[in-house]
Structures are given as structure tokens and as C-alpha cells.
Length: 111
Length: 115
Image (cartoon, rainbow over all chains, first blue to last red; front, side):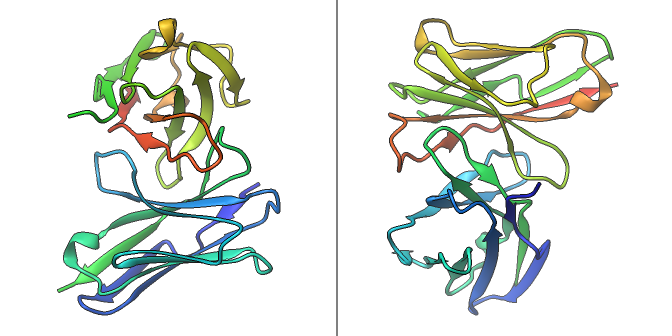
């Protein structure tokens, strides 16, 4: 039962353009959402989060959008840079205790 | 460096052997979490501690797995009688208080290979 889904295993974007990563969830109890970035042989690094009382949160080049009615969130990266190439995980929480992760999207930024 | 640290980074063992991993959380973080990540999947929750108390265990944590956090500081995860299916990346994370909007910060992980 995959409660958090990232349906695109990979995405390629040209440097300088916008990268849009998508995530869908099924558990209506989720009320806090996070994006993590992971390089090979490293642990996930926190990027940005959003609580269910908001529909947008922005931090520099990164913006997360939440559509609760559609149970959908997205991460926008603009402009995309070569260092953004990594695997991005969407995660959701119904409590502070544990995160439920998606399967990840591998983002490749093409110079 | 004040991030989460894990030791060892890599462990290769033979089926049936016991292994133990260590996690040192960020100083003064009350909550400590263990996750497991297999190839092509996202991290999956195993267990978490509030200080020294283990408060929840996933059904993924079979009887062969045990975790401790003595004195509420570092934590150990032991796997007894390892099986090939235990091969995975074991990730540790910590958070300050366990509040609703706490962020979990992850360590680099321990990659276990069971031959």
C-alpha cells in the first residue's frame, strides 16, 4: 500500500529552466509534507516543507505547492542548476513520529 | 561537524551472523529514528525513540531486530541471524523535540550487504 507516490522515476531538465517534481498521496490524515534531496552514498538532506494549513511555501529557488483536495504536491526548482542533479523524495507525516516516503524521482540537469 | 553520524558506513557479513550499527544524533535532539532503504524504494520507518524510550516499532522490525538508546544519547540497531533480505541502507535521523513541524535530519547511513 503505497501511500505516497512519485510516478516519475526520472526527469531531465535543461540548466536554467524550471524543474517540477510531483507527488501524490492517499492518506487524508497526512498534514505535513517534506521534500528531501539525496546524493549517492549520502543520507537524505532536508530541502523544504509545508503544513496542510498552507498551499505554498517558498525558500530561495525552491517552492512547494500543496493541493489538498487533489492530494497532490509539487516541488518547483527555478532556475535549475547542475548541482540540483540528485534523487528527490517526497515525504508525508500524520504525526511527528514517522515519515512515509515516496519512491523518489531522479532529476538530471543538463548543462 | 554537528550532523547525525553513523558507524560503520559499510558492513559486509555472512548470512547468519549478527551485526550492530551505531547512530549519534545531533546534540540535544530528543528524538531518534531508524529507517531502512532498499534499492529503488524510499526510506521505510523502523522505529523511533523519545530520549531513551522506544515508543513505536514498525511491523518491518522482526524479532531479529533490536534497537536501544541508553541514556537518551546514541542508539544502536542490532540484527541477529542476518538474512540476505536484510541487505539495505540503514538510515538514522534525529529531530529536536518531536513537535508537529519538526524536521528530521538524516545521517549518511550504513549500507549492509549480507552474503
